[in-house]
Image 1: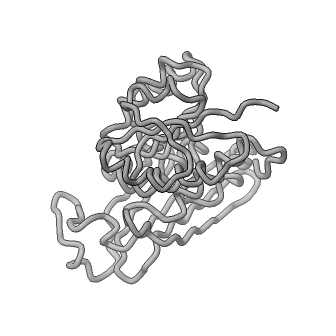
Image 2: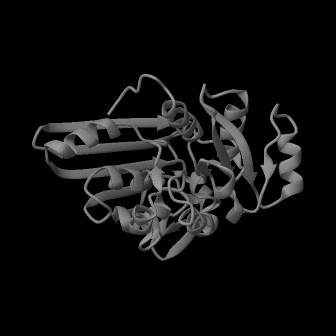
Length: 271
């Protein structure tokens, strides 16, 4: 029987902790071996409830301890881990901060040269299987419309060149309209779905994105419209915000868990 693959989790916020807990409970063929956090004391307390005892390491040392590294970091910390991963070819890098893949100049080319496998989970978006199939037929246009409750953008919401209190937004308000690349630069903590759609489809500059703050909804809503030579696909996801981090959807962590479970599954469903 083959040894389980070693998994490390970078970041133990709401997403990372759920991923670590799922690994601890058991995902066939995988074993939680290490974590990296900013505050080791706080992490120790959170990890105390696990059955396994993953070692706590500095972020840059994480790749050496694992075959698979799961990134669940704030965007500002991404580059430290990403650069460390480039020195450990042949491993798998599971990325939650998908937007950073497009913001980090040259990283994807460097990853290819280093034989680093990158996995971007579906996250909060549905319809990526259809998008990938449509890409094979011939894509013509891809558009993403994201609507979130104002508080999902934080206490202060940027509208154009000014910031207003989330409580002051009384009607649906368009915060952004442009390309996926521009949306990621403008909302790096809120719009990883735009990067995911761009990578699966027409790319960061040809994917259209709208971002709305809507006080009339309680869920983070993502609508993707795909036009191809094979027809039109529309997929809508309505996700509850994460209770601990409303900028993300609650389903995001479970998308990562599903991706990990699929890695060692005998049957893989979906394209």
